[in-house]
Amino acid sequence: MERDGNRRGARVAEPFWRSGSAEVFRHGYTYSAHPTACAVGLSNLDLIEREQLIGRVIELEPVLAGKLRPLADHDLVSEVRAGTGLLAVAEIAQDARTREPGIGPRLVAEIRDRGVITRLVRGEALQVSPPFVVTEQEIERVAETFAAAFDAVAGAEPPPGS
Image 1 (cartoon, helix red, strand yellow):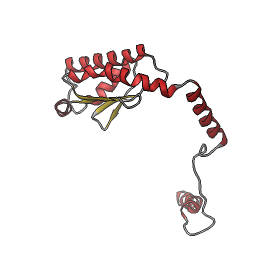
Image 2 (spheres, one colour):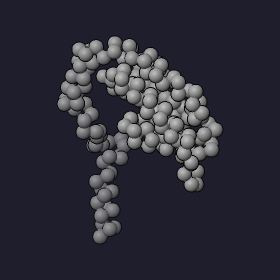
Image 3 (spheres, helix red, strand yellow):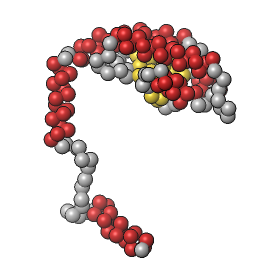
Image 4 (cartoon, one colour):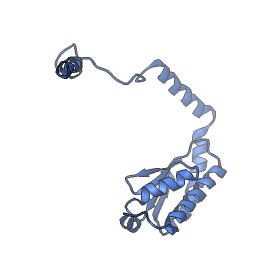
């Protein structure tokens, strides 16, 4: 049965891999160039223009950078980079990463447990990219949350095996 199933699988897969033939079945994602996806994209661009969100981002760039800049003084942070759109990273200090290889995921968990979404980039930096409609108060909350998470991790014992 399994051998027959493998033959059927190969027969079904073969047109996807056959080269040099007009019969090659080219495929893509269901939403690729789908009229609905294109209409949604165009509507999103219209909304960005109508709500003047690009101008808003330009106004909020220095706010985000300014609110996160103090993190650079934290023992667990080597650098804060921001100022290009609503995007910023707090790089985890190399000595902290060496001392505790799992510190990045711990920080991500601490920040998310406090209600802010971040992601770990290359195991070295925590990225935040708030939505274009973020308020200055929400940016303040992001900065406070990052600081609280760094403080919590700095004051806690590393997990066993780190």
